[in-house]
Image (cartoon, rainbow, N blue to C red):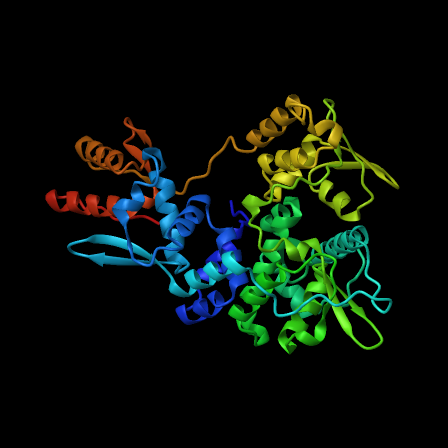
Length: 462
């Protein structure tokens, strides 16, 4: 089953795929170096910091001594990641063996950033009477509203407000992989689209930003410049105003798209225009693994499979509708129930029981979240059992063989299929067998070889 993998590593895979020249251009920015460092696995961070002030290559054998015996696999993952991002250079020598050295551009800029800190290319505007900034609470409310309206428009729910700022071409970019368009029917959520809606906001944001970067060249924008600006934006201060005149034309156009997503808020004064980053923007340089802040939940699950969601969000109501039956809705309360039929519909759309249970656990109301378990065990067990009911039959592509000339040839064919681990079924009395499609070509060659040794001929049947 296809899964939407929304993790920071995917974003860094795009960074790793950039040419060496563009990577060095990225590493010339001290904030990019820190953002890359944040995204690394813990062991990779340790290696970078240990080698930060070492100017000579470090032997691989010495680095292996830095980890315990049971950390070999993590060590290999860390080294591979550093090589992919060209932070490490691998040096092979017949006498000295393999050694690693830090990318000098990355090393020098990270040293400067640690010693003296970095200076953003723009400073916050002086707050005076001409600049009326929203409070942090108002800014967070704005960001959440923009993001939810965007998601509602993204899935063509019809329940949300239409964001006129997002062009149809941009919306098509964001909808790729999440919606499928058929000739007669309207857009329909794919399996990945359903899974996307059950993920937390940070994971959804990474997916959208990743798609935005992947399609940068269609808008005549250099992906390296876009990555640099997005990561740099994450080091701005939430709630502070920054002058738009300090940005290039490409950066200004990017901010307009980000404002529609709720990452920044744009404001116009008498003389100047400015943008205000929200938490969605300043969290971009934090990997998903490091994002430990837990949002307050809203779901109360009862042992009788009834569920109460304390929410006024239209989006959250639509998400609950993916796997539950909505019974009635009050201004701040959604009453629903998890039924066999509602779950079967969710499973048919590609949502798994683990995803539903994880969503319920992550969004448990504070009064339930402290309980162990936060979701009643009889509910989680039944959700998994109902999913198992649909997985009793496993489909395997296979080929059927019969009309063997003798018992010896039939038994030889069975033995051959067993050796290739492709035998699914055999009938010794009628000399019939079924083998997996993966070994059909080998079986055909084997039977042709057997036919040459005797007077019979075997012909494959369609």
